[in-house]
Structure formats: C-alpha cells, structure tokens
Length: 617
Image 1 (cartoon, one colour):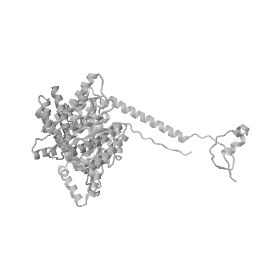
Image 2: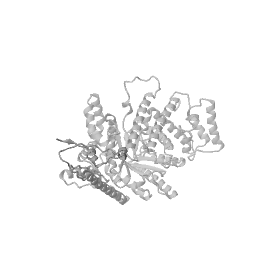
Image 3: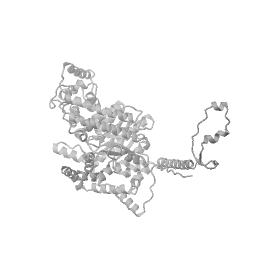
Image 4: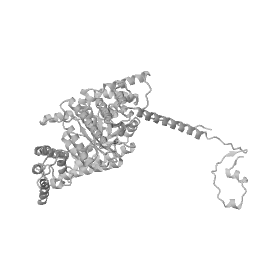
C-alpha cells in the first residue's frame, strides 16, 4: 500500500519540540507529494538546464560583444577616402547582401516596369478605367504586391517598424511619411455644414491629417532610440486656396520691396508706398495712426530696412500683424487677405505648432517637404517661422527642417538669405537639399500661363546649384568652427542639413567637402537621404562607414498611396530607368545564389540569435 508522505512529516521526528520552537514560526516548505514503497535516498542533482542556459547566454553575449567590437573597429577604420572607394566600386554588393532572393527578384521586376515610359504614362489612365468599371481590386492587388512592397513601408505606421528595424541593423535611419489624401478619411455621408465658412470642409480634412501625423510622430519616436524623423506637407494642414492667397501676399511684398529699394535697402517712404499699394485700408483711425507712427519712427531715425528686416516688419506672425493686416473687408478680390483668411491662417499655424510641439517633446525631427512653386513662398514663410520657435534651443538637435529644391533658379538666393536670418536671430538653420520633383509640371504650367519657368534651364545648372549649396553650407560650418575653436555636433552647430540625393557624384562631393572643412561623419551635422527602395548601394555604404543616413519611408492604405506611387513613377522615371549598375548587381547576386556561387556577406552590424535548449534529466 502506498503512503503519501510530506517533507515536513519526514523531518518532524528529527526536531525536538521545545517551547521556543513551538512559539517560533518555522518557514513553510512547499509540499511535494510522492508515492513510495520503500524509503528513498535523496541524491543532489546538478541543475543541467540552468547550466546549459547560462553557457548559451554567456556564449551568445560573447559573440555579440565581439560583433559589436568588430563593427566599431570597422567604423573607426573607415575614412572618407575608403568610403569614396566603396562608393566608386561598381562590384560593391553590400546592399544586395542584405536582401532575400525574393526581394531581389521583386526589385528587378519593379525596376524593369519603371523603365518603360509608355507604362508609366499609361498607369494613371489604366487605374482610372479600372475604378470606373469596378475592377480596381485586382489592380490594387497587383500594385500592392509590386510597387507598394518595394517603395512603401506598409499601410500603417506600425507596419513600418519591421522595415525600420531591418534598416537600423545596417546603420540606416528612417523618415516616416504619411502619404495619404485627407478627404479619404472623411465621412462623405455626413451632412454638409451650413456654417463655418468657405474653408470649413478643407479644415475638417486638415484636422484629420494633423491627428494622423501626430500618430506618425509617436510611432517614429517609439521605434528608435534617437534620430527619428517624419515628413510633413504644409498643404496637409491648410486649405489649398488659403495657401495660394498667402503665396500671393508674400510675392506682392517681395515685389514691392524690389520696386522701392535702393542698394538693397528700403526707407520710410518706400514702406509708405508698400502700405498704400499692398496692405488693406485701415478700418479705424486708431489703426491708421499706429501705421503712421511706425513709419514716422523710421523717418525720424533715418532708418532703412534690408529684405530680412522688411519681411519681419510685415510678418503675419509678428507683433504688428493687426496694425498692418486687420480688415473687415470680406471681398477676396479687393484685398489680398480677408478677415476669414486671417482666421483660417491662425488655425493652420495652431495645427502646425501643436504637431511640432509634440515632435520637439519626443525629439523627433520634422522635415517640411517642398511642393509646387505656387505654394512654395507660403511654405517657406511657415517653415521659417516654425524654425524661429522650435530651433532656438542650442542644446538640442533642431526640430524643423525646411526643404530647398535646388533645381529652381531662386534656390541658392533663398538658401543664403535664410542662413543669414538664422544667424541674425540665433536659431539653428536646418535644411534638406533636394534637386526637385516637379520639373515637368512646373515647366508646363509656366508655358501655359506665360511666365518664365522657375526651373534651371539645363541639367548642368541644376548640378551647379545643388553642389554649390552643399559647399556654401559646409563653408559656413567651417567658419563657425574656426571662430569657436571647437568641432560641431548636431546639437551645437548653427547649421544642420541633409543631402537628399540619389546622385552618386553629389554624395561623393559632399564627403570630400566634409573632410576639407573638418566636419566629422559621426557628428550628425551633415546627413544623407534617399528614397526607400532606391539607390540602396549608396545608403548601405554610408551606413556601414558611420555617416548619418536616412531612408524616406512612405506608408498608407493602398488606395491612398497609389497617387503617391504614380507621382513617384512619373516624376522619377528617368532616375528609375538609370539604375543600371544597381540592377546589374541584383541580377548577378540572384544568379550566384541560384548556382551556389554567392559569397558570404560581411555583416555590417552585429546580429546575434540566442538559442536556448532544454534537456530532460
């Protein structure tokens, strides 16, 4: 007959019960029941499971530290010259080694399609026809399995995290971009509001997009330790008509300055001319008196204003905004900005500042995208005012980056003027330099409307503008280092900028100029950027050698992102068709993998897999 015996029952005969022990609270041992016919001898057993796990963890940790040490040693050994050699190496497979065979095959297929101009041109019409006849489902499926997978990070910001993590293993950061149309998120069955003014529906859209962008910022901040960034478009925060009117205001002010200046300065009489020709009529005697008082002050002091001071005087966010711009005239043809326009402008700024405040708190950079020229003056106005407010902390990396399309004839002048403004008002100038994405549409619009094209006349002019902008900014950084005697970082430099380019020559030139001006790769003062799914050889090489490199990672629901994909295909078809070297590397890698000739890649960053096993005893 089996007896059930407990540990305490076995031990109790060995303990002599005394009053002291009776009063003491003995620790209760866990009761383990077991069956026995004979007294069993207890044998101490070695904890093999614990020892095995400890050995494996120790070994894995050792492997990890060795990998980290190797990666750090490689980064320290990297020089500008060795990085440039890698960029010149047409056999450099660092990017293709990081991809699966399926990913390489898909990339080859997508690149081939993008290299067919007739298909790129026909794509919008094919999609429109499919939607008209209710056949969009198979079209969307095809786009999602090809172009979307190659150029986008996912349908939600959360889906982008896996792509961000994978890129981070190769030293590449991301710029999250919400690529959606705002009206797709509105309830089309909701009753149309009878109140709220002409901008009501557009502002509903802007409110929705603002919330989505804040979610994007939170996701970006939570997915990486630091250096997170997001891209925003000012047109997403504002009614388009308002931005068009704001653009006209800024253009009118700048033209008035040119008409009334002498040697780059405008005096009190010139300001009075601007007041009479551009500004709305005063609505009260008090407003008229305030205007005259400001002009009289200039006359009394015989003061003249340069263009920076002139713009600040009439700034819509300046302290004298109501003195110059307040009006009760609601005729949009009679005044440049009506009172309704001013109220909508204030709400736009409130949305932007709310989002940028969150970004600053989360330490997320905000890339303000460039857009069409008929919006760009207004966008620059908004971006510069945001930089004044959010880039003023010299102990933190800048929050707001403005974008300069260097293929425009005015880009270099605007770049230099904004740098001068940041120096004068002591905030960090942060910029992204791109060549531009609207060349065809800009030239077509200029021809149709009978004005001079804002785009550089030749490709050589565009290259000169872009590379000249890079040299100008690096020279400014060198001047600051020479004056202070200290090397700059992304928290101490007066200028931080991104070279957002797929042009290999511009990337190499930037690295050479960085060395010439003693700007270190690891400082983060100069960053590089490319689109997700394009020019990976550049990106992975820069990441391996310690340069700050970003991939522009768009996301959104497939039906929302299709307009983005179409624009990218149309605007960059020449670029996509010109990646012959990268396509050849992909093809060679796929062939070598199939035939078993592929060489084992050298890991660009430590990656350790910890495997645990258990053994039964």
